[in-house]
Figure 1 (tube, rainbow, N blue to C red):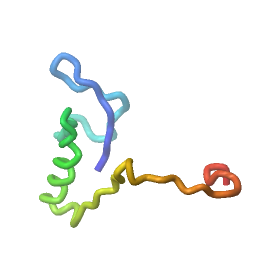
Figure 2 (figure 1 turned 135 degrees about the horizontal axis):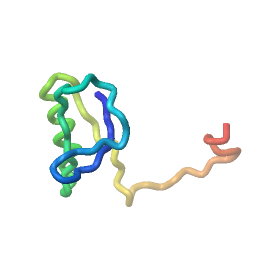
Figure 3 (figure 1 turned 180 degrees about the vertical axis):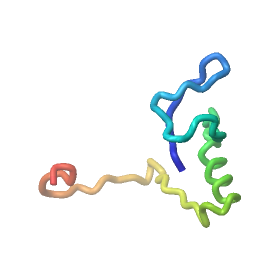
Figure 4 (figure 1 turned 90 degrees about the vertical axis):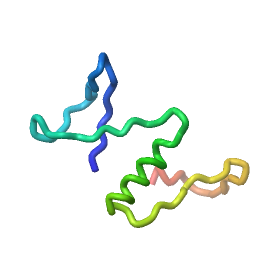
Length: 78
């Protein structure tokens, strides 16, 4: 699946970057919901289409999060 960004202007979606598909290709646009259900709906539709078998939540409760102190240089510097 390809993901591109765009803005909604006057009844049209204007892409921020070019889309590598032939002209007049039908595309599907997923609009995120303001209530946060957009991602759940996205994964549900992928599951119904048989494109994913299962989904897992990777969100951690912030109250349970404790960073682990490590020694040495940061991983991003290696």
